Length: 183
Ligand SMILES: O=CN(O)C[C@@H](CC1CCCC1)C(=O)N1NCCC[C@H]1C(=O)Nc1ccccn1
Ligand code: NI
Image 1: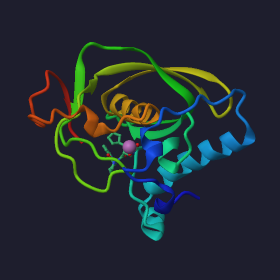
Image 2: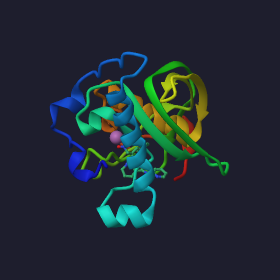
Image 3: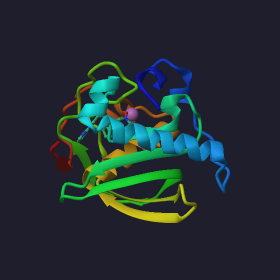
């Protein structure tokens, strides 16, 4: 199982690489890796398991964070309307997005960043993501709210982008003309 010792931290070069597409149909190894990533996200949201293994809670994880430079992400996130969005995807891609922006009013963090980096992270308010599931099914997800923010954070990791790359250094809390999302 993945624990915090498997998660690489800022400064590790893999976090700044553009990850490679996963050849499909996925190999048994790539499927096992993606399953273990979703297992981490789910374990980290279970206080008993997270406490037992010292897991930092996460609503998403990208393969580069466990030093696997491949285009795979796992997300399990409440949608703010009582449902949980849970997807493990190979080769996720934002195929369209709103002009309108959105941001977490509490700012963002990252399991690969052991420090607070204050400021608003401007994201698209709505994104359409295509990808392939563990079962080999092509999916097209139309996302908004926290799920949209989370998928953008994870797909950024596949392109070597960290959340703080988006923060306005001159004025981290510069008002963003968009949809604020309370945590
Ligand atoms: O790449 C993946 N990661 O780095 C894990 C990150 C991904 C999220 C950060 C912002 C959007 C996606 C993660 O989940 N966290 N970051 C550090 C510790 C807290 C935790 C978090 O933000 N939790 C959360 C947020 C909103 C509502 C409920 N819980
Ligand atoms: Ni992250």
